[in-house]
Image 1 (cartoon, rainbow, N blue to C red):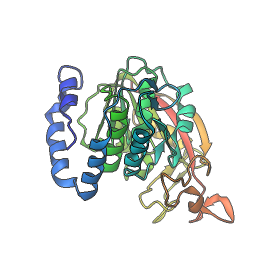
Image 2 (cartoon, one colour):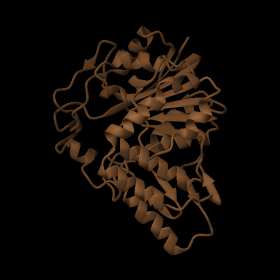
Image 3 (cartoon, rainbow, N blue to C red):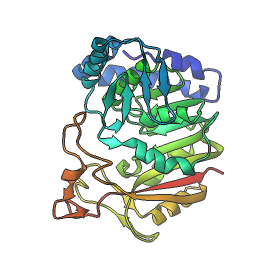
Length: 322
């Protein structure tokens, strides 16, 4: 089992303390109902990883750690165990000679987002739909005091815990296997990130309100999502699949999304970036060997998905809670 007790102790006396009224019961229920054979294998791989204090650790320019005290055999053992946690989708990571070449170049997204956000130094941050936690480590690299990621996927939790162990058991970041809809209205985070989540929500305005309810007054929302070209009235509602994904519900234009945020009561809403997703940013690798973006685009016209919709275009919007 994953031990969440230290996180409970860490938030017991601060602004996140009201979360303890529901969180322990939610995580106990998750452990009873969601753990299966794969989880036990993944947890075994984590347990066999060495507990290391890195001699060199860089969270500012990437997520990397190394030590001069490891033998080649120990380094190979680390890679073997990390490969038991495949597929790795968000990264990359460089850990004791093992370079995890993830499906997504999440560092590219971070480079697009970072110039536009308020400095994270000293902030308490929530990362919604955090995946394996790559961006959480980059947030710590920018000086965040505490980063909490939420994502219900078991594999992502195990990948995060493996990286945490190799980074010296850093307790400034925590990943909890819950969804945003399970959080009470905490109104406690200085910055909330929602990146790559909105288009998976059946009710996008509800999602935006849930994000707003986690922010302190004056707090900042960083929203990154799929969009389409168009004016403030343009919204694509795909059929059964979009780029082979089943759970894609609404793709607004960036202008429409700005309007949605304003309708939800956010202020100072800015569209700060548009980027077409390339097959260099999202691709098959030896750490994620199944189909990726190249197989999801029309082979005759990469401006379209295989279903005939506009190819993935992503936007970043920044907004503030009054």
